[in-house]
Length: 128
Image (cartoon, rainbow, N blue to C red; front, top):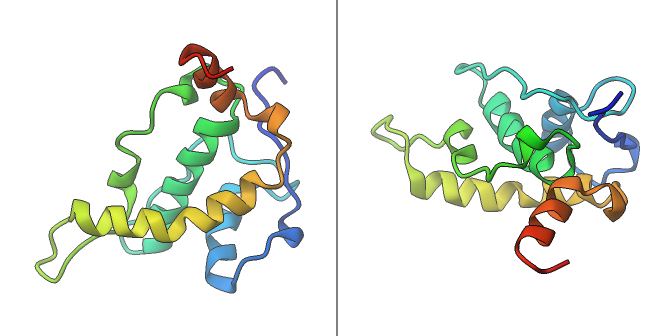
């Protein structure tokens, strides 16, 4: 497949049970990362977190150029609602930082030569 996503070994990830529940929503049974964002269920906050992590991973490693656009609105998927039940960018930013370790664990399993989005942006910005 031309735009196939990379595979990872989910058993090798150093994550707790809740984090693994997120990973299992973005990784298929054969270990490959989904090529589309997982569905978000408003009644299940893990799905919003999975959508966010998937977007950040897809930006970094997908071969599909559509995924290489900056994930500026990725935090909108996070279930960052305050006591007033309104979505909060401050809470979303905090949650994104808390989820960064999951992204790092997944990216750590993918060889840097397969970081297609990062490579594309590195070249366009003159870093590579």
